[in-house]
Structures are given as structure tokens and as C-alpha cells.
Length: 297
Image 1 (spheres, rainbow, N blue to C red):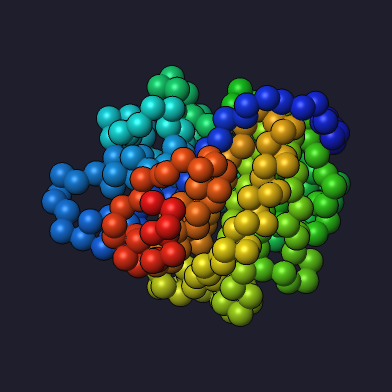
Image 2: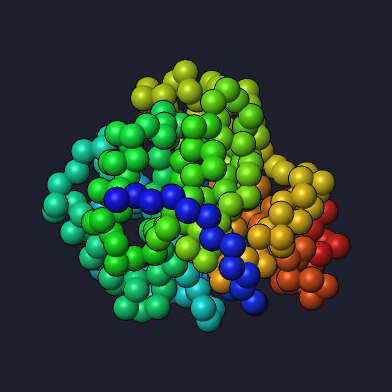
């Protein structure tokens, strides 16, 4: 039974994880990653020097070989690094999957958990997934397959406002303000909070909805995430994250506005805001692209 509740107990010194949705973007070269890197250059290793979590995007599109997932451990150049593993679209968008596909996902979750690299499983539903009794039941049954792992649920439809869960965490999301879209309302559950920032490019988002299901280039598919949060928006998010951090043990902050390295820039901004006055390490490539980061480096 899927029981909705609201938990209020206060926590001390929550773990803070800040990063981006995915790390392997060609257009991040010469913006975040060095442009003239060799074939042996590890993007993940470089990324892990600056951030302590990343969402695995590739797992949403295909079932990754566990050998690939296992290889990530040797590419991490940081302590306490975590992966948020995104569930395949078969489970969330197509709503059609087999026991074998469940096993393929669990194999990789186990690989990461055994190496203490797993933050949890991210289950992202589309805006069409409304809070109907049928969908609540579907979600309840789906969660049972992954009950041995921490689960983070992203829903985007307005009908989910106020819904909380006893054993999972509903994500707080920021997305364009469109009809029936869930607004930015900080939430938490299961002693954790998970923030996902998609940008506010309303025009491109509306265009993408019209082209949903059509064949698109990378640039076309990514256009709706092409948005750079300004300093005022980042400061407002910072206040909300600080407020909610008093109620949980873990806070995850992920930027998905990846085109042109904007997610990297905003991640550095909010990282500096949340860790206080400590100076943070920022590579010169990203400062050259986003000069406002220089004052934070």
C-alpha cells in the first residue's frame, strides 16, 4: 500500500551533494573539460574533482553493461562520491517492462552499492503521469521491485502537489511555469531532499512538447534545457535548500540545464552559497565562459 505522510523531525549536519544530470556532453569541452584531452582522459575523473554526485543519464536510454558501471570506481578522484542512477524509460514513460529488465537494473545498483557509490535510484515520470488512483497503484507496485534501494521520485504534473511518501523521497523540481506543471515547492521525505533544476526556457519547452516522439538532433532535444539561472534565482534556491536541510539527513542538488555548460556554472554558484565563505576550486575554462564565477573561485 502506498501511504502518503509528512515527516517533520529535524536533523543535524545533513550530507550535501551537488552536481549535474550527466557528465558526458561534447559541448562541455573547452567550457568545463580541457579541449585538447587525450584518449585516456577520463571525463568522470575530472568531473569528480569538483563535484561529489552525478546523475547517470545513459541508464535512462539503455541498459548499461555492469562492467561499464563497475569501471566507474577507478575513475573517481574524490572521497564520498555518489551516483544517482536513473531508471530506464521502459519503467516510467512506456510503463512496460519485464523481470529480466528489473534484474538488469538491480545488477548495476548492486555494483554501485557494494562500492559505496550509490546514492539511490532516480525514477522520473513525464508530465502526463498524473496522480490518479491507477498511477499511484502503478508506482506502488514499481517501487516494490526496488525496495532494497533508496528511491527518489520525480513527478511533474500539478496533481501531485502535497503528496508525500513514507519510504521514498519526492523530488523538488524547477521547470517552466506551464499549465498543469508542478511548480517549485520544496519538499522532502524519508529523511532526504532531492532538488532538480531543469531551467525555465518556456518557449523551447513548449516547442519540445509539440515535437515529442519525433526524431530530433541532440541540439533540438536539448534546447528546452538551455537556460542559465541568474544570481537572484540561485540565491532564492539557496535559501530554500538551507531551510529544508534542517529537516533531513541528506540533500541532493542537481542541475539539468546542461547545454553550453550552464549546469556546471550554476552548480558552482550554489555550491559556493551552500558551503559558506570557503573558497571553492573552479577551473579556468568555465570561468572564461562564465566570468561571474571568478569572484567565487
